[in-house]
Image 1 (cartoon, rainbow, N blue to C red):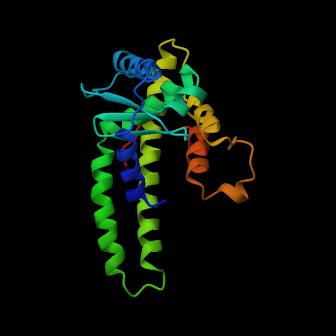
Image 2 (cartoon, rainbow, N blue to C red):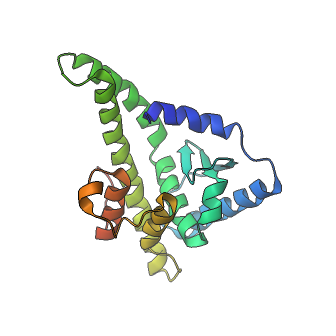
Length: 207
């Protein structure tokens, strides 16, 4: 799905959040993870975070500036360690202002793809490829920060570790990317991210 369409759907979902006691308990669970990370990780986190639980069949989470959206499905399938890993990833998106740079890149990508008018590749495919490459770059950077924050927590004696990121990925996608034929997954963004976590991210996450 095109990135701009995904962003539109996420915003739409945020307007149809769950309004039951389950949503409140889910929000409290997510907020507790955010506050735990802010208290125990050495990083200059921004003060303001909002949480909203969305009603969707997909296990997913998104960062829209100060707003973190988490699906009820994700809360149902992830344990506390896996959820904290996902929240750390989303906090990295928020701290690096990825939503804003991504929006700008969508516009820039559209212009770049349009200027490349002599290409034999259809415009929509050029635009999609440009945006997907940039999105993967941001996902890897968010993983890098989350990886290092989880490593910090582990070194401080907490029961969290970078591998929690991959355990969450396995549950979210229903695929153990550590036990698949690379031939069929080498271009899959989730597989690329899984393998990077497995290999280990560097201490510096700046591109």
